[in-house]
Length: 170
Image (cartoon, rainbow, N blue to C red; front, side, top):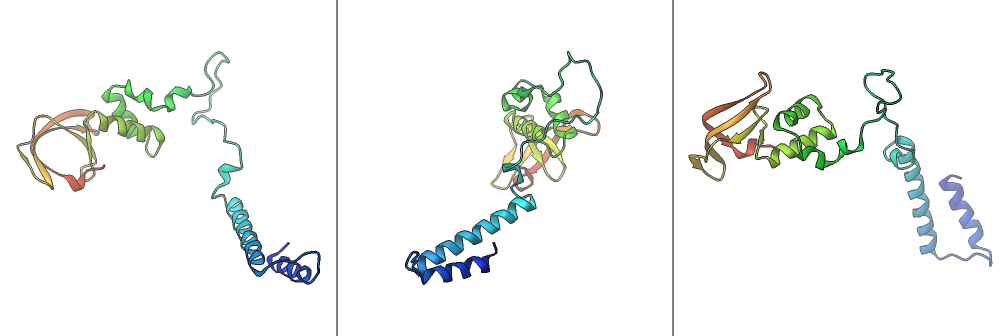
């Protein structure tokens, strides 16, 4: 039933004694109907499709028939934040750089931040204080830092480096 037909039906029945609606009630009903139409559009467009459809099953990136006694699905604890607490820094860096735009990258980044590493947006790498900074202001700090170089996959020391706070990923 379209909105126009619905409004015409309400106008026809308001004259009868059986159904008397105030103007306020008619407005509420038409607003409710408009909301239902909008919700139907959202569901059809896929904006909130996840609420009505079951979750997709896991499909591995590299399809390979393995024996039945090997795990066929990823273990659930790999998706928990507690799992990342046990990983080494090198493993966290690997996850951060080789799983872009994933939940795993986000969790590895959080854990690196918890371990006092800070991501520099301009240099696109991680820095950590090697010693206390020589100079600290509201906008920057200057000192010696350890940084992780993803190209060579090693940690190096950078002395006399100025670290601007607005270039940090918070």
